[in-house]
Length: 481
Image (cartoon, rainbow, N blue to C red):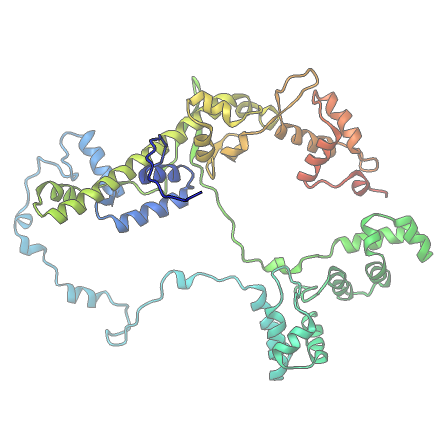
């Protein structure tokens, strides 16, 4: 059969998002910080955009709603005639050279004047774990080779205080023998915080045990030979093997519990992340309402100068460039306004559906899915999913991510799906807090306890929620003595 080439035409309809629509969708899922960065980048690339400063906003408010008719737009009374000094522009000319010279720091001349450090340079810098160890190393060893080996070891110590490199690897890096590396490592293991430089958990605990003011052989023996069995609480078996009383084992275990399994985290330089809510819930006489929080977000507008230039210019290339940038700026502003409107609608819908949670707390959180809010505000589920990503709301019960309110329902004992999974997890925590430490509830017993609280849930679901809450099983929660 002969092969031949043909050209066919086919007409079809396809929904293809434009670049501007893609940008609008992208803005929906951005967090506050990401949105601020995007807007600042757009202002750099697009001269049509400019930020509205607070002074301009206040000036516009005064012009729109003047509180005192005797005040003009710049806050001066119209009744007072300008003085003679105001009419003479020469009176306000400053001799800036002499002014700057007069305001130099006292006690130094202009020739010897040096620029003062910035505020950032004067901030107190918290020492890192590596800095603290290097400071102790310089005080402990004198030989240059030992210092080089020590710096190689410290460079391989993680933030939790454990050394992740093998002795052979450090020996190759520092061009020294493994015996020298081990000798310097033992020196570093005597540094503060106690337990730093260990290669395993057992070694970390042993270092802290030997650093006690009084040596306790039983504590060292338990760590060395029975560490895994201590986790299972086989105290009776350990006591019988060591031919000692169970009380002695329990006393030694209480001492081990005071050791730090990750000593390096004491010097963790990770800062605290503060959440700035996008919405704030306020209570009114009619119920609950939400307010948008725009603090920290740049407020942009189209530059009047370039807007006028677009209308007045006759240069084709300039007009085409300004028209393109004007459209991009206008669409960005509309996209930001649409984003604010969508956030408000979603927040308003969540508040309306979760009124009992706002009144009474977590135990009254209702199950809710994206479809519920999408149906309420007449939008697509994907839009609701994007707008609730990395957005937070400030309520009387605390600050929550908008995604927090979307949970599946758990069947109650009467058969209704009116119980949120978050509410069930809260019940599990309350049950465990009130249980007898000597006889903790198993997962099967937890199911029975939940049934009494009108929650019908399977044992495997209880196990799943317990693990998500980082709660140990009953055998490890049990306090024998």
